[in-house]
Amino acid sequence: MKNTFADNVIHFNKNLHFTDKLPKGFGVLNPYIENEETMHTMQQFYHKFYADNKVRKFIIGINPSRHGAGVTGVPFTDTKRLESDCGIKMKSAYSHEVSSVFMYDMIKEYGGVEKFYKDIYINSPFPLAIVRKNSSGHWLNANYYDTPELYFAVKKFMHYTLKQHFNFGLHDSLVYVLGKKNAKFIAEINSELKLFKRIEVLEHPRYIQQYKSKEKQLYIDKYLIALSKND
Picture 1 (tube, rainbow, N blue to C red):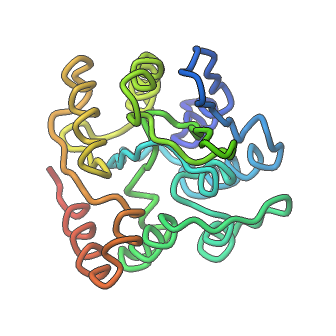
Picture 2: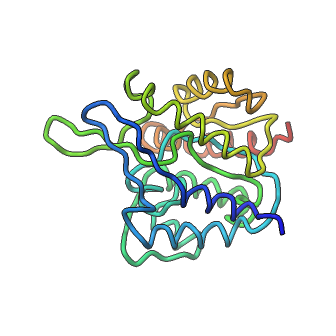
């Protein structure tokens, strides 16, 4: 019997292990190892929305935040949206993540979670949370491209994960990349791997929530128009 899309994603997440050396001051958090409930929650989510073999469009993020997928195991989904929109409650954690707010407002206008996740798959080229220690000794969210040394350290792993994503069943004519800087690096990687034909860049939800909140509806409309394309 052929594996479902959900089976493939769950297998991928269960076997995520990053063991390469990072530059000093950076670290990687693997939520599936650090919280047993995260593994269970992630499986519930994908069995609920991806238990089929439908080919989906791919939205490519950067890497998970500590308060979104770094807690729930579901990209751009904090525990609040996981419960209120997806109907899955976490008992061991509570999180609020600004990117999740925009994403789920957009999903509601798309037609709701069942329709959206039937059409769309979201993940990141580096699917684990990256953190950086600041001068006060606190760990903060970091992006895989924050320094050339960090990017070089994770690039091989990103090649592996992106190739795995496309084995799940994704359209390869057009992908959607969140963030202009992210798109630059994804384009560079794709020039080496030849995984998809074209990129459409969308503003990152965090940027919209933090800097363009008054124009939020314009960005939601932009997402909806872009995602309706059948390229």
